[in-house]
Length: 173
Image (tube, rainbow, N blue to C red; front, side):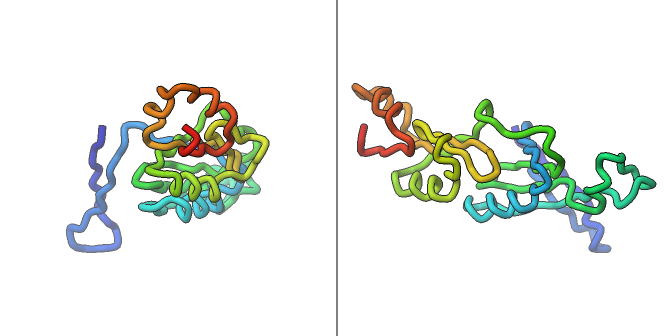
């Protein structure tokens, strides 16, 4: 479900509004102090992507910082961004929580060239590679698969082929 939010733009005296498309569900990704760096990386990898906005931590305890947040004073708190038109939020926090394979993002690729492109950009942990899954340098897991994976998996021996692959090779099916 997509909705719209209209917000008066404070930089203009005329009635000019920023329009934001609001998704029903927006993934919120926790990073260990490097959210801006990670978002810059993702925005460079995916087409139709951009940073939408930043929010910042307060600069002092008087403004609401807790003791454990003092090292983040004035730093980026969140980054709102789009990856191929999909809204995400990155939170710049600490090491308390990390990514694991229980959550991954699937990229539906039109052909082997697109699979190769995303694999070359995102695969950073060879020991985490298996049957189209890879992990990037920030620990986020990705499934880089052909858009017709359901059709390919109906072919004889497809499961066995998939289990032997790291990066999917469409021609092997």
